[in-house]
Image 1 (cartoon, rainbow, N blue to C red):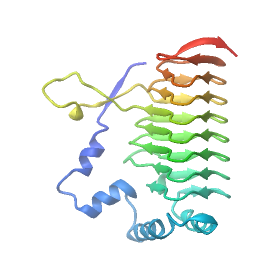
Image 2: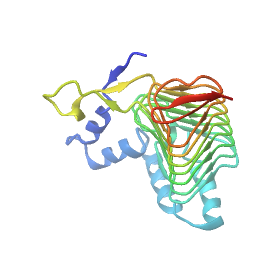
Image 3: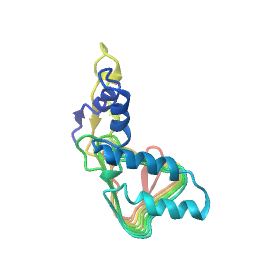
Length: 248
């Protein structure tokens, strides 16, 4: 797959633009291009209800947080101290559970954002973050604790996928470093087409899934693996770099 170069760091440069005021930079980072009334609603809800403990906190977040999102189903549970950014570009299905300290960040100027299916569990301290890309998570997925799901292009996770703790999945995010006359930070990001993980995949603890990878249906990936290439359906694979050791 041929790599494509894009100016992903342009968003970061935009946030550092000295011509922009603090309020505008804050809106660009947290809520996007929204009305003043929505901005005030977002601030009040996040300020007063994010950290409330116990059953009362869950009940209040369930009632108030749903007013922030583009689309949200029934029975969604929000844990304490969540970070929610650009919620108007987030769609959530029924019976989704977000554990404490998780992050949902759909930022980007032209992207669609984050779509999460029904009956999904997102573990504690897990970050689901767009950097100009899109993220899709299918029904009955179980995203473990301390996971990082980052997208500068497309990251698609199918139904019944479950990931163990400390898994890192990054679609994009590789900088070009061909030139030596300018810092790497100023050089374009390289995209290999994103990451596709098909249904019924089990990813072990501390795995890294790199851009351009397609993991076919029914794969099992051993703990600590670095997946840098396409894996055929029903493969059992492990290692750094990953190697298919047998078929299911």
